[in-house]
Image (cartoon, rainbow, N blue to C red; front, side, top):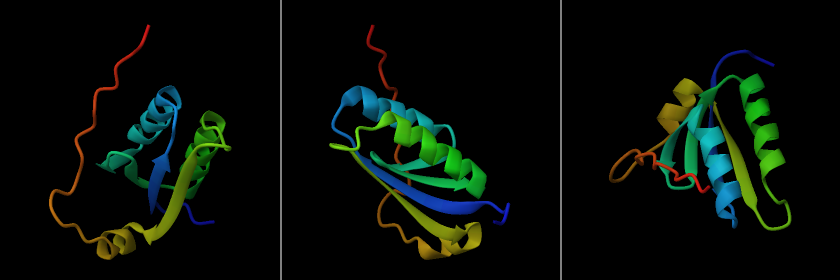
Length: 98
């Protein structure tokens, strides 16, 4: 497996607010939020495996859904994406519930 950074699109539909916030925080650490529940990650495959495993530990596989799309090299990713309107979505401050 190549150690070259690659592009990955990650989208989720998570029912529980707490689980959703945890997944968003994982993705915000290493990616760019494109839409509310869609992130673009530019990471090495080993990092993507780590992200995948961390998210798998957070979700309820009976009710939640996460899709990971490999988009190739960074150059292929950039060439393959076309945006209408604004490109990114401002990260939201996720409130902490105590």
